[in-house]
Every structure is written in structure tokens, then in C-alpha cells.
Image 1: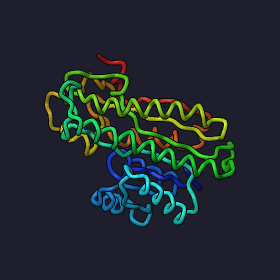
Image 2: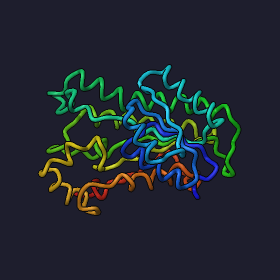
Image 3: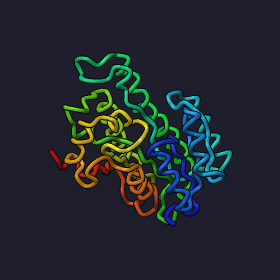
Image 4: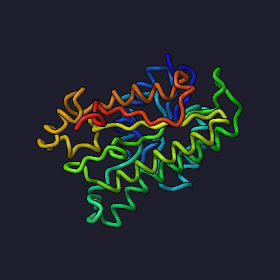
Length: 261
């Protein structure tokens, strides 16, 4: 089991985060999951009864993030890897084409996606720097962030949400810069850039016949939307010691999005 004897902190309890929690438990990990949505937490607890510890918190606030890490250390004595998978589409708040994007849509999207990633990474790094190199490979810890194909492979017809793309671009830039800085300390930091995945966040797309038809050739490997379990498989690999010498990378798990017109 790739995550045996590891404690994994997952920021998120639904969609791709939930899929990763399920697979991580199957791979031997202790999982501590955080979300601000009580329904997401309840659903995860129902799926993994007695197998995951959950905590409700809003990760846009630094004091909440500090409490999260303190609680995880209290419950499990520490943690080995962190997967930041919370975020949202700001479309309902006014995200869209740049000339029409509202300031509210911009601020909410950047805060939910980029600021939470910054705060979670910041406090994970503070903990990792305080510990000795603990794995056989010499790592102090691992961070995995959630990006998006839209950060580098935009799509103008159906996915013109420019604040969202900017937020994920910020996550990628932070991930790569931090990976370079913290590699000598024995900490590896990567990101996953999914294509369009079946999650609660993509409900609008799932109900749009035009998008579904478009996805048949935009994501030709699944000939449609990706299942969240596909992202979980990549996440578990990058969170495991199998990826101990991989850092500063953005893994596209996109069903062919970035190589298809």
C-alpha cells in the first residue's frame, strides 16, 4: 500500500478531494479532511465510517488554518503530506469574460482558490520545516496543490471564466516557486491540473448538452467528462514516496484536453 503509515491532510471533502480520501484510506493512509460545508463532511463520513477524521473550517482565514493544523497534530501527532483541493467556480458571483467580470467575482474566486492554497501551504511548510527528515527517502513532507487546465490551455466558447483561470495560474506559479525554494529542505511540492471532471462544481457543465458534445472531442480519452477517481489516482501517486524525487511539476490529468482542439 503506497500510503501505509502516512497521515494525509486533505483540504476538501467533496468531489476530487473525497475521491482521493477514499483511495488514500484504501492505500493505508490516515486521513484528516477539512471543509466548510457540513453536507460535504457528512457525506464523506458516511462513505468512510470510522476511517477518516473531519474538521469544519473556512480556509480563507488564517486563524482557521492554524486551528486545522493544530487539530490534525492533536489527533494524529502530525502529518506527512497535504493535498489542497478546495476551491470554487466564481461564475455565480460574476466571473466570466475579463471585460464583464465583476470585482466581487474576481475577489471571491481568487480568495477561494489561491488564498486558501497559499495559507494551507504556508502552515504545512512551517510544520515540515520543524521536523526531521522522516521517510526512508529523506523527505520532510509533501504538498500537492489543485490547479486546472484552464490556467495554461484556455477555452473561449464554454469556459471563459478569467478570474478562475487567473487563480489557478497563481497556484501553479506559487507551487513552482515554492518547489524550487524548499527542495533543499527535503520538501516536494507539485500540482495537478485536471480537465473537466464530474464533481459538484461542474454540475452546470454536466447539464449542458453543448458542453457534453464538445467534451467528446476536447477530452477524447474518456470521450466526455473525467471521473473524480482518475484524479485521485494521480494524487495518491504524487502524495506517495513513489514521487519522492518529483517536485515543481504540474501533472495534467485531462483526458487529452491540452492536446486537442
